[in-house]
Amino acid sequence: MKDTLSIALTKGRILADTLPLLKAAGIVPAEDATKTRKLQVDTNQEGTKLLLVRASDVPAYVEYGGADVGVTGKDVLLEHTGDRIYEPLDLGLGRCQLVLAGKPGANPDAAGRLRVATKYPEVTRRFFAGRGKQVEVIKLYGSMELAPLTGMADLIVDIVETGSTLKANGLVVLEPIAEVSARLIVNRASMKMKHRKIHKLVDQLKIALGKK
Ligand code: PRP
Image 1 (cartoon, helix red, strand yellow):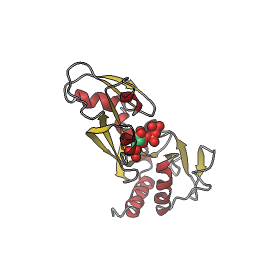
Image 2: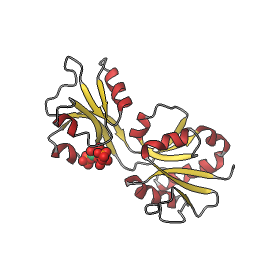
Image 3: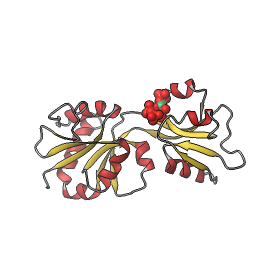
C-alpha cells in the first residue's frame, strides 16, 4: 500500500481549477472527473486515484484515512473540529471571505441573545465566544441570506465571493471573519508512511503555483 495515493477532491467549482494543477504535478485522471458518475477515478499514475466526495466530507476522509490527501476550502477546515490533519499548502483557488452579515445597521453587539443562521455553527460559536457573547445558532444548508429577510435570524455567517448575493437581498457585510481559499490537506499517518510520494506531490504543486 506504500505506493498508492488517494486524493479526495470535491465536485463543483474547485474541481475544474484543481485538475490543471494536478496535471502540472503530473497527475491526469483516466476519465473526465467533472463528468463521470464514478466516485473513484484512476489516473495516469499507477496506484494514484482520485476520490470525488462532498466538500464538507473531505476533512473526514483525510482524517480517518479514507484518503491520503485532499483539497478543500479553508471554510470547511475551520468548521471541522478534528486535529489529525496537516495543511501544508494554500492552493490559492476559490478565494472568498467568510463574513458576518445582516441588514444594514444590524448590531452584532446588541444586548440580548442574537440568532445567527449559518452553514458554519462551529465557526459562528467560536467567533462570538471570542467576544464574550453567546448566540443562538440556526444551522442551515444553503440560501442563508433568506434568514434575516424573513426575520428568522438577526445575522448570518456565510461565504462572500463577489458580494452580489448579499446585495441582491439587501444585506451587507458587518465584519470579516476569515480569508478562504482551497488548501491541500494530508493525513498524518500517510505523511509518515508515504512521505516521499506526498513530499513530491507538494513540491510539484508548489512549482505549478510558482511558489518554488
Ligand atoms: C454561496 C454563498 C452565498 C454565495 C456568495 O452560495 O452561500 O450565497 O455563494 O457568492 P457571491 O458573493 O458571489 O454572491 P452557493 O452558491 O455556494 O449556494 P448555497 O447557498 O446553496 O450554499
